[in-house]
Amino acid sequence: MSRKILLEVKNLKQYFPLGRKSVVKAVDDVSFHIYEGETFGLVGESGSGKSTTGRTIIRLYDPTGGEVIFDDKVISDKKLPKDDKVYVNKHMQMIFQDPMACLNPRMTVMDIIAEGLDIHGLCKSKEERTQRVYELLRTVGLNEQHANRYPHEFSGGQRQRIGIARALAVEPKFIIADEPISALDVSIQAQVVNLLRKLQKENGLTYLFIAHDLSMVKYISDRIGVMHKGKLVELASSDDLYENPLHPYTKSLLSAIPLPDPDYEKTRERIKYDPSIHDYSTESPEWVEIRPGHFIYGSKSELANYEKELSAKCLMYINKKPYLISRYGFLNLFKIFL
Image 1 (cartoon, rainbow, N blue to C red):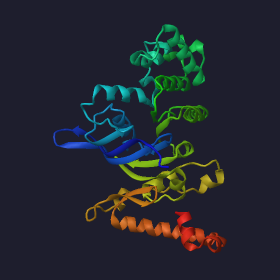
Image 2: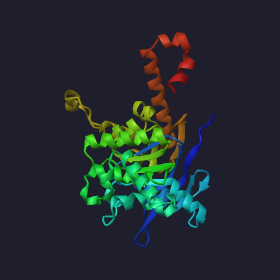
Image 3: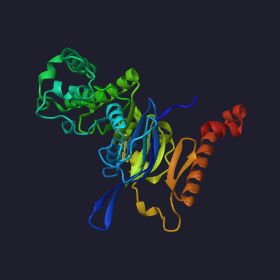
Image 4: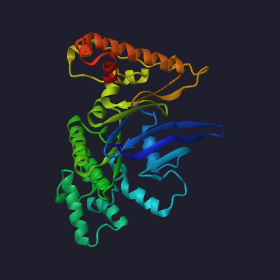
């Protein structure tokens, strides 16, 4: 049984003018899809276009080109029908990196969370509205007494929880989490991520999880896309990307992950990424599925080298597990590994 695709992004472009003749290509020809109920991680360094991608998907920016399809509706058109606009606003929500970006300092927590309920007319009475807000606060680990306070009276972790409650209020299908844990300390990060996973299991939510921390993204994501300078350079399942990274930029990001091992950290060598190794003057790069579910961006010669690297890893794996050959046969083993 095939899985339903909830969000599909096709050749998305987001350019910003820089003077009369030049533009900044914040997002340049990006394509991916997200299945219903999964968490898709999007990682990359600052300025790679991750947040711009998320903001363009949710229509905070009008895309320069490309198509965004959400729940079988094309939502990237500038003149979106009113019914489709209401549908998107209700079923697609965003958790911001800075909680204060979505919390009005002049409104109480009660009014902030209930704003979506009021706009979409989801509560018939004031009492129902109040009880719904109390329920949402309890869901994110806060209590009823917090409802009458203002955002500045809370810590960073509590504000992020309020932002999550605000996003959940209208019962969305899809949530874009734009670096929701980057400004929090490690213990609060774990609390927020565990809360998001719990809510996903209970409500069947789908996430686009944008972050810098690859270790945290691996923990929460089913599939991961790696962005660099507006381009999606590699996309694979979480385990596959960590075990078999192919693009030099992905390897550079993985080498930067610290491990809680002092002896290893003393000898760890960071892989530095040099963009000049890619020569696209003679060969145009392509977005190719190099093996099922594993996509990579590169020229024909680079793709040939990636194929060789995969074959070498496969042979190395076979040498370590010789007993598998007699049991499965070489061809079947190759399929298992791939």
